[in-house]
Image 1: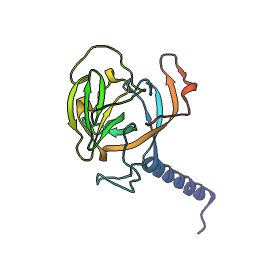
Image 2 (image 1 turned 45 degrees about the horizontal axis):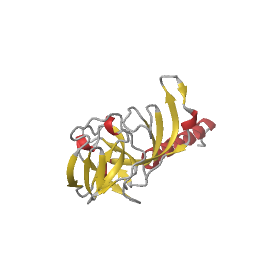
Image 3 (image 1 turned 120 degrees about the vertical axis):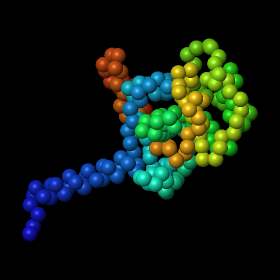
Image 4 (image 1 turned 180 degrees about the horizontal axis):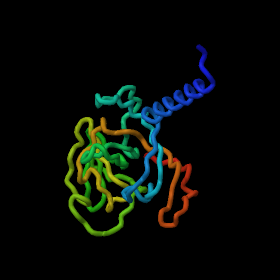
Length: 199
């Protein structure tokens, strides 16, 4: 029995749906920025695309990755599962990777004893608090990352919740594809299509 036009249409739509799911879960996914922790790089209402393939494909239910092309590097803007709530996604910048020694003195980050150059960082106050602005040096364990928000004084990050497991990294943010200013109720057209600086 030959398939009708309606059947053909359903098969095409089903195939497109499956292809979309594969693309979404394996290669690229969109994320909306809900907080101010990455200002000025990312604003509340920005929507970014993350490359999920570059750090390897997640195997559902096994907590493993395959086809790993690269590991997260210092400066990468990553999306990962929160160490405090695995059902919540966070977006931060990688500041140190396994084997690095990291410390902070008076809001200045030092990696392996050298001050870091972070032109993307914003500070909103001059107060000094521990561990937000000062912490003693320690070495990043194997398979872990130290992440921080660019809006240093307003970010909940590795200074508070600890290291991020590389296995919990979901992707590398690379493109700002939409931005909505909720105060003005207008799109931020000048931000759309902006590639993110991972350095």
